[in-house]
Length: 272
Image 1 (cartoon, rainbow, N blue to C red):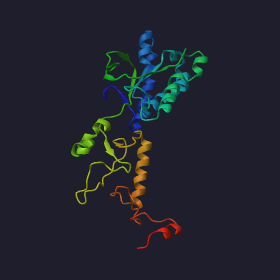
Image 2 (tube, rainbow, N blue to C red; image 1 turned 60 degrees about the vertical axis):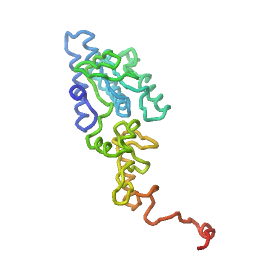
Image 3 (spheres, rainbow, N blue to C red; image 1 turned 45 degrees about the vertical axis):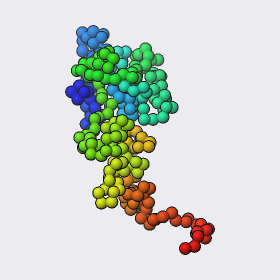
């Protein structure tokens, strides 16, 4: 994968992707290539139908409809975009209605390229339940044994956990037991506290986790940068306001027990 795929992790990856797309069209434009060679060169494959893979697939289609039409119009009939997903749906972390709408937009969107005669039909296909076994230098082999030739492959199926994350999981019994659901991520509660970790001084948790290396125990969130940013801002507010994060339900420093909100509530309290 590392040797043969492009990624979407760093800022410089965006420039590399744009160059790679243009390079595919330039290679396909070389004289004396067979039609099959042109099709293979203009086969764009994206592995992983999560938020990153789906968004990039849409952006690539937009690029082809605008820039591709402007500079490589005669080659557009050979273009094929394939989004590959091992699971049974795209955007697995979102609700079913959004999954269906995303799949429809990817495969049934109308385009002026058809009406103007550049292509005969939708250039995007989505392959669900298609696990990737091997990524060669010019082909992808699926777990079914089938192969798909490509000229350009982007790996958007996620990355393996970092050694630090694996070490943390290994040191906490609760985390090790939760890996059937967490799948290489650290499980936190709703307040982003790492479950199973205890402070030796008072036996309560005091270590927090945010981002795609973690997963909420009760309601998993999408592994996106937007979620990580919101989690960081949330913890920042809680810390700056002095919330006690070691009690079961965090409370602000000025409150040690539920307080009455009105004079009527105060009057109704029993006397000491």
